[in-house]
Length: 165
Image (tube, rainbow, N blue to C red; front, side, top):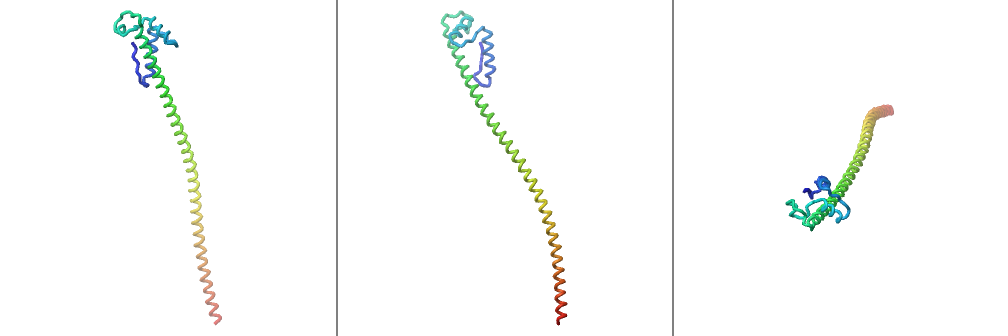
């Protein structure tokens, strides 16, 4: 007797159990159901429900073995279908993760480019602030010179007016 699980999580273990049961009982799995059945009956496996419980000889009908074999084939098909669905889900998840990785890489590259631009702008701003401060100093100096020149001009006017009087 081999016990297998219908769960996809235990698929590998169930397959190994079936292979072991097949090898242990001399079952040779072939492409057609009839030849597979013949190998089961010929190997001495029990073919009726009562013969599974006791070691009685096969009653010759073999219906139970056929039903059991068909049930196992249906389960195997179901498990293969579940494996295929799981593969598709895994492939889908892989593609989604790959898309996310690509988006993250693109975002990181854009972030790096923006950081470089920010650094360049900050340097330009520092230079502009320095130039602005230099211009303010020059303006203040020129303003001082202008004020002195105006004072000199006013003084000269007063002197000229006094002379003309």
